[in-house]
Length: 248
Image (cartoon, rainbow, N blue to C red; front, side, top):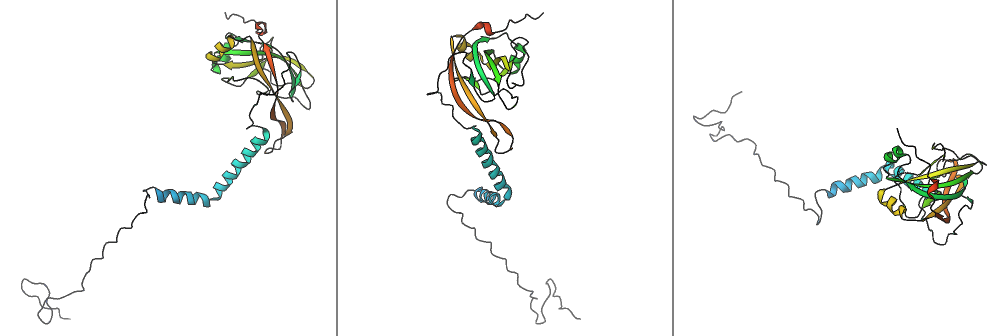
């Protein structure tokens, strides 16, 4: 097979003597830029895709359904209820008031910065508000102390209140049906609240009752649906504070 002759100093030539011609190469035109919608930033399309993907995911709907169920269950249990004090009956001191899991009769209150100082430091409190009371357990079974059953108007504690034995100082776990138990209710408070309490002679106490019912989620029977029941104007009585033994 013969090849086109090469001319001196030139590339391949055609049989007619002219330069050999190959297929022409034409550069593709650059694509025209796509105009962006007004107000669209560089993250807009990505965010829209993520939202669309989340909306199509069944996990999103499962989580949303669970949140709705939890919110409804909490509402049924009374967790979102306000605590109105106006219009509640004011009961006398020492009156025995049924609160559901137990009856309560308040005795007096005081403030101490020396009682159980180790626990006070753990809960970041500066002082204890100490309320003396008698708790008598109610059927159908022994119950824990409900931290919201005895509260003080406008007082925020640094931790949940606890109940202790007035003599031994031991923490009490249960209130038993038919048994009257003297207790001290310990509220850890800040320095500022402790100073405010020091200036008071009467403590405004709110009593809240509970209903024994079935939890909407777990199906377990327990004391739920807190409902403000009554108020007590409790006089100060520093004798309710147990004697504190000096550490050796």
